[in-house]
Amino acid sequence: MISRHKRTALLLAALAAGLAVQALAQDGAQEAASKRIITIDGSGGTQSGNLRSGPIVYEHPEPFGITATVSTLSIFGHHAVLSAPEGESITRGGERVAAFTDGVRVERGRLTATGPGLEYSEATGLGVLAGRAEVILAPEADGDDEVRIEADSVAFDVDTDRSTSSGNVALRNGKQSAEASELIYEEGRELGVLTSAGAQASITRLDDDGGTTVITADEIRVLTGSKLLYARGDVTVVDGAITSTGNEVFFDDNSGIAEVIGTPDAPARALDADSGTTLVTDRIQQDVEYDFFEAIDASVPSVYDAATFALTERPLAPDGGEGPAGTE
Picture (cartoon, one colour):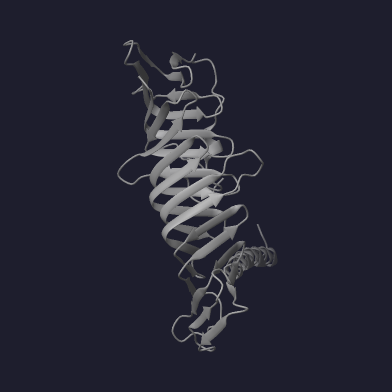
């Protein structure tokens, strides 16, 4: 039986531990909030407005003479307005909004983006580049391909190295071009996730013989640096006369090899329309350069792992969805 003194000591220890966890959580939240504070340097230009409550207007004669910095994101323009919530001081960070108009350039690491305007919110940590926006990710090594993205808008998350492109998205990378309504892209890992609400995403690859290979699916994930692709959900691979279908496909752009995977209820299928040859099996290997397909022995393990294509801290769920953020 635990004595009253021991019970009190245990309760105090548990309380102290709980307070410590709460303090750590608060410290983490405060640190994240501090990284969202924007600083604007309009040196060489003009600054006007209410210095107590705002808004403050920055103007510069140079097209990108104004420099704003927030976390690892740099924003350049020649006209900006910094506003605070009604009744709040403009010097108090955390809830302010900075709007850049008449031409904006964004830089982060190897990424450069341009567009007509950008609005940044300290509350959300998102800078949204609106109007038709263009993003270019420079290659990490000489000889590699750049990544070029065009979209109606691009939202940059300053808490991560992630951006979300929305509306008429086009992605170009070497021999591959993709179209979707949304693209989530992690710059450090060079990982893109393409989806189209109510439709399918598609990616087209220019083959060495001048032909094309087209992959469509509910979702397409690409590692643009290593030239690997993973698509899932009602997948179709069309290479000339050969069409393969399945639930998932892995594709290596370096070798031109696709691995099409079915399910127990709906196996993978391949059809050569020219010869009439049909194959129905669990897994199919399709070579888009040499235009042939064959069954993969069930005893041979796949060299691919879908987990490689998961967004950071968001593992792939078995049902084809995305796991909750922060999970391992």
